[in-house]
Every structure is written in structure tokens, then in C-alpha cells.
Length: 355
Picture 1 (cartoon, helix red, strand yellow):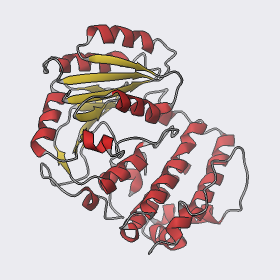
Picture 2 (cartoon, helix red, strand yellow):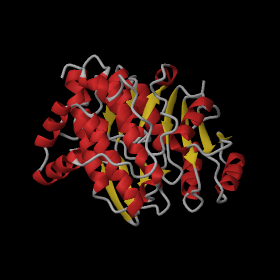
Picture 3 (cartoon, rainbow, N blue to C red):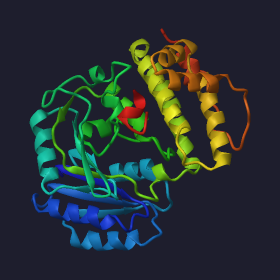
């Protein structure tokens, strides 16, 4: 069996893909034949990225290209990579980011020595020429722990707010149990229900101080910078997060964190300026509906814990009249999300948004 699979989705990242591919080629030199594979997923690129991947498959040892017939977004592309991967351990990289020399050898060594379900790492955030170390929000390093214990407290940034899939490595048993897969159809925030699922359902994890992934921010055509309708998928993602958490055996303890994070990320999107006026009205209406779907007591508790400005804005939004501006999201089925949460015992684009 291959020791490590690195899954890299690409979609129209022609200016940045060469950095990612060069970093994989450098890392390949640390491995013998059959120890590592680079699963390069082309999510129906139309800008010449596909030609780069054709060349990479020939030039980079252990590289294989998986081609998707139609665009599905990063969640679907990662799932296609997972379907093709053979590794005992699996990790991710985005096609517009890159890895430091020797990173994957060190990452594999950490996973093998700790022997847990998954290991999380730090990373380096890159904006232009500026480099910033971003630490996984968990203080104890190099120790195997219960991942459920890293979800709380509700009012602080915790491990579930650090949702970057590429900041870690995951044992194959998580793939075989279904925990490692992403929700097809989500075009943004696909990593939010995923990271909560990982922490609720895996048995063990650890955090190590590796900083080998360089995360490129401010890419002009990145989905997080484009204010089109796909950005509204964060509402579906957080609805799913709340729904699944409401069925958990510890729902009474975990739901306050899930609801507070949802409220915080709603405020984050409302205060951005990415959307054109029509879509801004749709955003506000759907966010108001989302807040009304959540359990009243947990929303009040979440808003009481926030600063006055955020709290007041979200309270006003929750009271606004119901409107129907533009196409609507999928309706919440009876017994799911807020309906299930309401009968229980009872941000983010980054950890800062979820506080």
C-alpha cells in the first residue's frame, strides 16, 4: 500500500499551479517508489491548467491526474481524489497553494509516530509578499487526545474553527468509515461540517508544530473573493452542521458552540462588501431565515455573549419581515436542522469570525 496520498484539486488556477506542482516535485525526492502518490484532480479547468497537469503527470514522480467531466467545486473534487487515492494516510493541498521542501516526509513521520486517527498542523498564510504563521488553536502539542474534547468552549476559538483540510493528515480508516468525505454540492464552507464531523466521530487526534503548507490569500478569482450565488452555500453548510450536531449524543453540550459559530459567520458575511445589491438583499433575507430556524434559547444565549454591535445587528436581522428576494435555498425538511435542534436537550471564514 502507498504510505501517503496527497490530493490536490485544480480549477482554473493557471497562474498559481506551477508553484504547487514544483513543490510536489521537490517533495517527491524524499520518497522511494510506491511510498507516496500525488492525486491531481482537474475539476474541468478551462484556462490551460489542464495542460499543466498533463505535463506534471509525465514529469513528477508518483503523480496521477484524475479528470472530472464537469465542474463540481472543491468538495466534489476532493471526493474524486479520495476515490482514487491508495494511501494508508491521506492529506490535501489546494492547487493555488504550495508545500515546503520535506513537508510530506515530516508529516508522514508525525502520523506514523503518533498513531492516531488524524494529526493537525500549523500553516503559513501568504498575502502578496507577507508571510504570517497561523497556529492551530490547540495548545497541547504532540499528545494524542480525544477530538471531541477540542470542540468546546463555545465562546472561544477552538479546533473546529480551524477547518483547513490541508492543515493535517488523516488515517485511511477515516475514509473507510465515511468520515473523511466532503458534502458534494457545497461550493463554499464545505470544510465546516467536515471538521465538526471529524471531531465528533474520530477517536483520536493530535496537533504538531509543522508549518509546511503555504496558503495563498487574496487570489482575485478565488471563490472567497467572488460574490456570486455560490457564496450563499455557507448557509446550507451551517444548516447541515447544526442538523448533524443536534443528533449527537452530546448535543446539549455542543449545540451552543454550533449556533454561536453560525451567528458569528452570518454577521461576518453581512458586513462584507463582495456582493452586488441584488445578491446582498438575498443574503440578508436568507440569513434572517437561518437565524429564525435556530433554537430561540441558543440564539439568545449566543447573542448575549457577543459584543453589543454584533448582537444588535443580528437581533434586528432576526426580527425583519419575511421576504422572497430571488431564488431560494433548499427548504429545511421537517425534523432536520432547527426542528431537530429545537427538540434536543437544550465563523467562519476563520477562527476569528467564530468568536
